Length: 223
Image 1 (tube, rainbow, N blue to C red):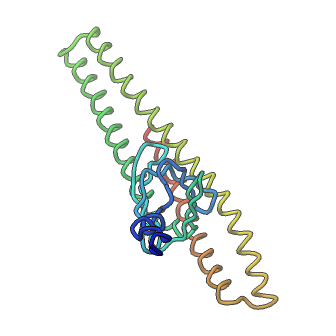
Image 2 (image 1 turned 120 degrees about the horizontal axis):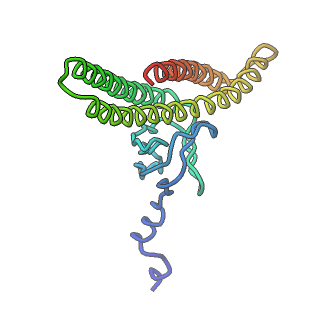
């Protein structure tokens, strides 16, 4: 009868294997940069480690982020990725922003061609003023939608830029403290490793900041 004092092994394993929930939680990098809301996460059950996460950003776009080598903090309210995740996020954002800008460029080119064709048709007498004015109104509606899309994208990109600036300030403070200790004393192995990561992350932030500035300029030229 002694065996009854112990819980069934299967139930104990299921209890131990219970994993934190990420779905629906905001996802941050470095506790500052909000990159979207978690849709789902993939865990290594044995290590109880989040190895990838699907995120939906403010623009409604979903993407996967590999977190297998990144420290992750999961609370009841949010998911926070270590700043080491920034380079991967940067690569994804470069592809996303470039793709969206190309789509907007294509829309602008098609719109300009439509205006040109209408003017040609009017000059050649193929259409009259009534038809011309009616079609111009439709093109103006398309142009308005294009302009709004540019404005929304610029706001989204600029918001990321503001968060990056805040994250950069936090990292610069840590870098200065570690640099000062290195000059006056000596960094231990973990501190030296942390300083290296901070310097790499600052490089990624600078690159992403340049992308944001370039993207805003291109958006204003398109619209």
